[in-house]
Length: 447
Image (cartoon, rainbow, N blue to C red; front, side):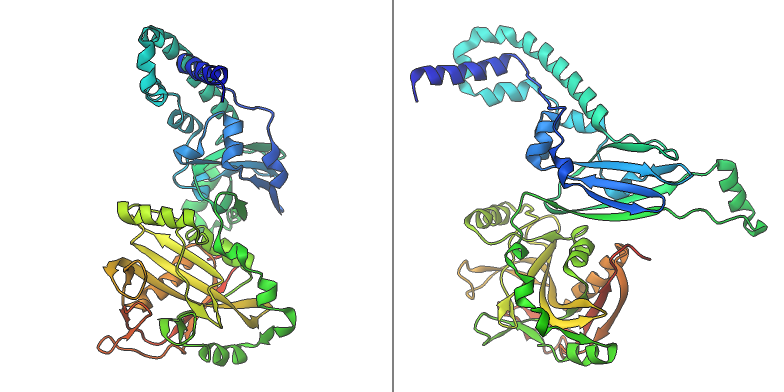
């Protein structure tokens, strides 16, 4: 690196210290090429989720760093009635356009501190701070205008009209689930009359339009990306089952996971999910997070989260084994820290019910950390011994999400009372009523 290039770089940084540049790319729309469209007789909806880099280009600032993920919508009203988008169904924590802009505004204090101690070598330049404040003010004002212009405006979409823009949501990586609900609008007088005089024979109110989008988002290397489900479950090995066939086959599945050698038993196999991979991912990903593959980078993130007691939503999950392989999919729900989360592991089976693949799995709840000599790092997560609670939590959670078509229980795990518990691979005790929860997933939201 030459002296002139160093000076040029420093000069550029100094210029940015004094002047606040703001250069959004109004013409950039490459994310639309990945858009997904669904159509209802009353509406046609298109959804796209830009990557963090694409969002930075569109808005001129790193919104992802501020915890904001813009979701682009285009809604065409095909019905004779006006429709209104319910933004809280997309994200109850959504940001308004001006709120999102305010979070990402330029700050003179941050700019000066980012420049570093070398700024004191140019102490006379501090007299230019008023210029910096003025240019930051106008940059922030333009930013407000850009966010407002790009935002999806909450207003009725009249018959035959099309509305489009961004909804500013919280960040999700791996998979983004976007629930679009469009509510038909009717005159207030008609609505109140139906409420006060329900027996007049008036036509019932039109139900809302409900569409669910499962959108892949770059940013993490989810563990299931390494799985080739066609190899794991070749078409010629699939076993179609009737309900009379399915129950005994599920009860005959292994009672517990094992270590890699298959010589020791681990956590109970207490969950069955019926549905194709896209439906499974769509049902869980709105409320659960995917797990990253194990690498040096993700291990370091996990260590930092463990030491700081912070959250790492996509932390890798340790391997358990079934059918001679580790889990095909791992999902998790974290609380305040990495030490408090639910783990869910799923394995694809050869079974098929009503044309849908059958998965078996294990779910447990981490409630803390303890010392152990069974693993190399001498610490392990301590599970809640009442594993039936975490099993039943999955049913309740998916029912709240409206993705359960049917649910029930079969045997197969074996009863294990609290007085004489079993233990998993790391020595944690657990007890169970011996049953597996069976969940038939619904591809669309249902009550």
